[in-house]
Length: 422
Image (cartoon, rainbow, N blue to C red; front, side, top):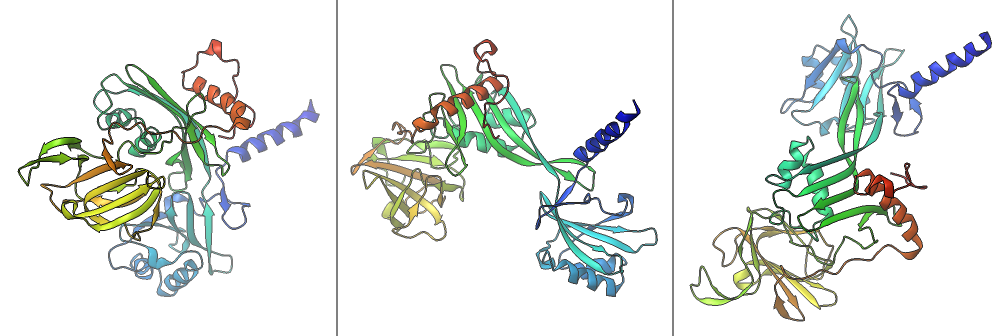
């Protein structure tokens, strides 16, 4: 019996170490002491940066002697430039019962901490710590009553998750006009948490990857399953391994409504005569980002008659050309001959040229002939390689099971497949 006591004590010690929030040195990756520091948090004073104030003057106003204020500022420069502090930023000043400074902390990022602490000789040394963090896999689902945006917010998630979800299906679903009341969505995703030394608890710091997602409409269900490419980036495929990424985006911007459709006979609102409208007009506020609908090369950037500030992009060796008109301005660094990637911002909505209000005129040409971009059926990207198909199917089935899309009786595995990293 007594021989087991050391083992029991070792087990308790291991559990304590396992769950103690630790900081990690950004330089060496070795464990250091908890970021809560040597001073109790009840002696911590929040300091708010005011407009025009420097760190040294802020410390002086907090009662720190001038000599120590200079030492602290000098030490902090070793890991962080105090000139990068902005009005509204908050620092934490930790002092002992006599008011002597023990430590100054500042969190410039969601997962790391910089500061200055007093050493044994009475001077100050700088430190940079990574906050302890962990990732949780979370599953949510819901029903659309008004919009997808409202539905996701109602279950307690943030707009960033909506953006990431809609990005996966942007080639197949236009979330501004396609969703209907009663549609359902399913999202299996990662949530990142960091240990907050001020509250001594875990704090949500952002979203990780979406592992799988599905959107269920009245007549069909689209389900996307992630699989890492050669560089480790997650790509999305259907259950058969076909890519969700297509050659052209469904629309090149987030818009309020379509104000004019493709038509060979439309009365022009300014010219007051009937003429062909060989594109689609998307109404959106001035400054709304416009993205390239596919990879290509810019063949025109500048003023183009009634289109005002306009960009034309050639795709697939000129087989397709897209035109983006009435822009307020172009994205920086672009010129004729520049290569652009699908989804890259190329300009911003405006009302230049013959326009009654801010909107984007979007035209697509096929072999020089204008076609209706709303009716094109984009070609899918590359499917899962044959040598990885079996591994993908195992992963996709496990993800489908986690989202409740695969009945338990049809799925034998209760643990992630071998090699499932996230």
